[in-house]
Structures are given as structure tokens and as C-alpha cells.
Length: 60
Image (tube, rainbow, N blue to C red):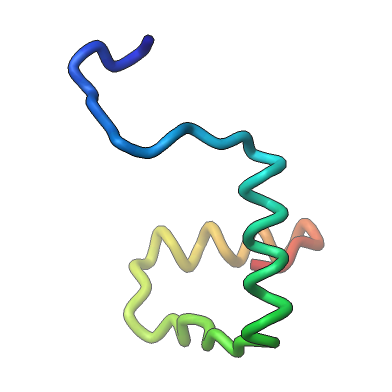
């Protein structure tokens, strides 16, 4: 009831059902290699944040 004006023809699905559908699709398609952003155009503030995450032991 969050969107009173929304009209859709599809029935809502649960997150568990969505997860199952995605898992089935991944089995059919196989592993997909998605390249990560090289980070060549990062702002100084973004790079500083990533450096602090790395110092704390995190990996971005």
C-alpha cells in the first residue's frame, strides 16, 4: 500500500522466490566475469576513503 497510484499487471514475489529464480538463471548461464572499475578517475575524497578502508583491513 506504499504506492496508491501504482498499477502493475505482474504479481509481487517474495525475496526468497527471487533468490531462487536468480540462482536458477546463474546455473543456466554459468559464471559471468564482470570487470571491476579500475579506479583511474576517483576523486581525492573517494581515494582517501578507500585507503582508510584498506588500513582497517577491508577490501573494496
